[in-house]
Structure formats: C-alpha cells, structure tokens
Length: 492
Image (cartoon, rainbow, N blue to C red):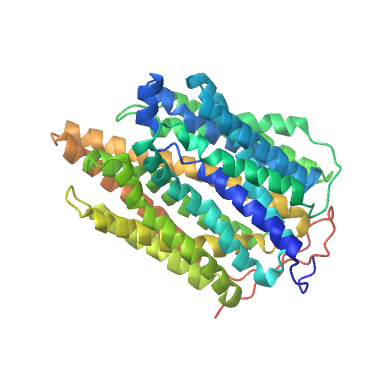
C-alpha cells in the first residue's frame, strides 16, 4: 500500500479483528501461572508433572512460530486466521472439558498451535496495511496485546480461581474466541502477496529439535532444584544448538532459490538487529519477573493467588494506557529517547527491588512493578518493534515478525530459567551457610532481581546507539534480492 494512501474502513476492520483475537490467545499463555496448586489437587498430579502444561505450550510455540513466515505467504489472511482461531477454540473447549491431565495437556498443545500464528499474522498485517508514518501508533496497540495480555493473565486467573473451578479459565475465554472466529470468517480479506513456492519439509522437521530442544533445555535449568546439575537440560541445549546451526545453514542455502522456511536476510538490517537484541534483553527481565515476583509474594509474603494477581494488575493497566501514546510519540520523535527512558526505568526499578525485605510494603511492590513493567516496557516495546521492522522490504515482513516472535519465546524461556536457577542456587548456598529458610529464599530473590537488572542495563546501553530506521521502498519485488540498507537518519 502506498505510504500516502489513507487507511480504509476495511483495513481498520481487519486490524481490529486480529487485535481482539490476538489478545485472547496471548492472554491465555500466562493464565496457568497461578493455577498449578489447584490443578495438582484436583487432578492428583505432582508439581513437576503439572509444569508440563506450561512447558508443552512454550515448546509448541517455539517449534511452530518459525514456520509462520512461510505460512503467511502461502495462505490467505482469512485462511490463516480461521486455522489459528479454529485450533485455539478447539483446544480451549477440550481443556475446559478435560477429564484428566493427559487430555488437558493435549488441549494446551492444540491451543498453542493456534496461538503461534496470531501475533506474526497481526504484525505482518499492520506492516502491509498501515502507512509507515503511522506505524508507531498502530504498533502501540500491538504492544498492548504482546505485553499487557500476558501481564494480566495471572490477575484474571487468580480472580477466577478464588471463586470458580479452574475449568472456567477456559470456559470464560471460549465465547470470546468463537465470536472472533465467526466475525473473522465473515469479514476478513486477504492482504499482502501470496507465494506459491512449495514448503521445505526438511526445514519443518528441523524446527522440532532446533527450537524445541533449545527451549526445553532452558526450561530444565529453571526447574532444577538447588545445587542440582540439569544433565537433561545441558544435553538438550547442546543438541538444540547443533540443530539450530543445521537449520540456519539450510535456510541460507534455500534463500538463493527463493524458498526459505525462515528468511534470515532480516538480520542484514542494522535496525532489526539492534531492536531485536534490546527487546530480547528486556524480555528476559519481563518474563522472568512475571514468574519470580509472584513467587516472592506467595512464598515470602504469604499472599494468596487473588491478592498476588491484584498486585501485578497496575503494571498491565499502566502499559495499556501508555503503549498507544508511545506509538504516537515514536511517529513524531523517533525511537531513541523512548527506548532510553523505557530501559532506564526498567533498570532502576529492578535495582531497587534488590533491597526488598520480608516487610516491604505490598503497595510499594505494586508501584515498583507498575513503573517497571507498565512504564518501562510500555515505553520500550512499541519503538523497538516498529523501528526494527520498518526497514524490512514487504517480502520480509512475515519473516521478520516470525523471527522476532520466535526469539522472544526463547528469551522468555531463557529469562525464566536463568532467574529461577539463580534463585534456587543462591537459596541453597545460604541454607548450607546456616541461614534460615526464609532468609535463604529472600537472598535468592535478591540475586534474581539483580540478574534481571543487569539485563536491563545491557538494553539501556544498546539503546544509546539506536537511530530512526528509514522504511523500505514498498516497490521492492516479492522475491528479489534485498537492496542495500538505507542509511539511518540520526536523531538529534
């Protein structure tokens, strides 16, 4: 679409439908985070078994998202949407009716199969339909979906579990998902160009050990107890790295034939690489804190699931308010100031949490989390995503979105694994040194907060070098070679 063309009502409708659907499916990703104790009791399973409800979801996402770049070019927008929401709705219904753990686990995998497509579909559609000079505003709304939906998942699930069966976590979502599916089937039209190249089945097969084993290995580090060496995790990581190298080598070879499953030429753009690394460092902090802070509130402070969820709620609310505003500011002033402000707030708030005690006011923790996640991530995510994807030519839109989402899943797994492993390791060392269990736990949380702060400082440092990316020429061919990258316009 030419940059000067005004968006039509049809285009706004398409994006609106995708936003609602994407919010529902991404919200579902973290809704299980506070439900494990209830599920352990109702389904008579151990904590390690119940954890697979989250692990399997994450693994499915990690394996399938790399294929979405190809899928979005091969199928129409409407077909992809119906497929994604159909899978998600089926999995949600199956989860609500699950008679036991095996069926519930299968349902989560089916849900994740639909979820994996939605955010790349939404981001690719925005890039295709929205003029470059207004992408920041629309990406601000996309940021709400990506960051706010998982942030409020624990709050909503805590509220549901306080009064209803865990099954209602799925039954409440199902009508919304079905409504979005019906409206999308009736109203969606295709955007972008279709690619008729056949899929490379070897590449699809390689995504399973490459991304699946890599994320699984990281997850095993997070689940290992204090002082334990996760042998399975180490082996999975090493095998995953080998297959990642094989997968990448094959994609580079397929690029010459114009038929990669995941086009790695997105990494030839400096703005994409900068934004990607900064976002990944921030996601290490975000996903790690979404898990670590609730553990602190429940294990050290003794709060119930509902109160824990309410403490986290202001962060989601602040981000929901700030993200669209940030998008408009990006369109007007560029990324650097916003990204520096966001990563700076993230680093400062995480640093202050190192001094948290067993008696720190709960209202103060809620305020710290709101500034850290709501303001920090709210100022960062929109300019980072927009500036990273802006310079890509149209035929790389879907691949850039898929790459960004794939590596965000990896960063989320890495952040969770790293912070939990450090927490357990430090707590175990303090217990052996004679500390009380409560003191040991608090020391573990301090180390986890400190590690998250280091990641945020790294993101802040890299943000100093960010420049506004010039949008690519929409006239670039669907299969031509990537033209030399435009020289970025420096701010200030």
